[in-house]
Image (tube, rainbow, N blue to C red; front, top):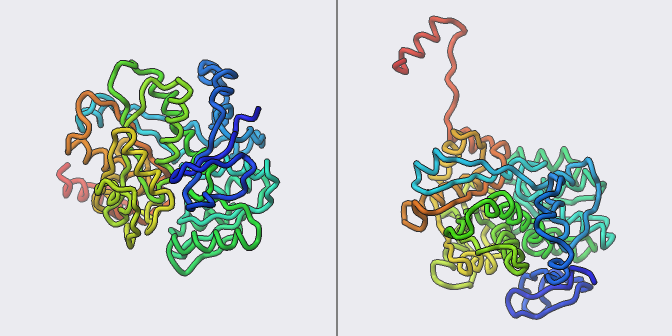
Length: 418
């Protein structure tokens, strides 16, 4: 029996078998959750086998995925995931929590969390014999698809807003993707990519829209389970996970991963999941704050392009990720995100603005008493700061320039008070 059974609508609960070719529910357009055969998985593998795996990528969790390992060994497709977790006792003491870890997904092959989804989407495309994959992106998802497609020989078409950071557009082009810049925002690019996929029969990778994107992103939860939770005292308070939110698919994917582990009986207790949004792109936060699942579009203006979304396409599941785990949503200012870039840099993590948003959201949660001295915390940096050098430079300021002489150096040091 196949471990991949089918889909269930996240809104009405309608189920579809694995042969269903739609992307969303045909009754209410709700996002679909992949249904796995948990009994088969539970009876076929023991967690110890996973923990003992020598596979240094997300494919160590192939038994828990709805796709088979696609191969492409020795390529970037087989090095996505299994990103490092850094123990940060200095920050933990400063913020006032028991333990603090930073999980750095900027270490992925194309330097963002989105490589997880794209690797799994390539595997799915291989299984259904899809030749062309299309996605809309502000940069990271597109770069991830372009990089994974280049590694495996697939044709990728990327629709991106023309305002996307140049470094991200450069990645798309270097990886050989067919890049189409849209004179509009991310939401415009999303709608166009869906229409194009329907018209031309392309396989649509869009975040949240394709159920397999969350299946790729859930592997971060598996890694947190293996790297942190399995090594902690199971009688302690639940782990607190902080992640930035744009479309909502990363946080919903992480929730799906922990839910899978809980269903399998491998997770002692569900972590609390906290979503962080910019105040200038806060549609999911606003729904959560009202105690609602109704996602009302906003006009997103945050400089943190990875989480700048008018209408989050996976907003309902994003709200549930917090409400169902005892977590919360937090809105932070753009000014604090700049500070977060600098703060993370001081511990050796070069974070993109979205990753810094998760960090300052965690700080705000500590200030508001949502987490405290008995809590363990992990913050997910979703991408490398090299993705957006302009923002990094604004966060740090310009380097000093002096004449190449000791006299000039002494003058500079004296002015500093050294």
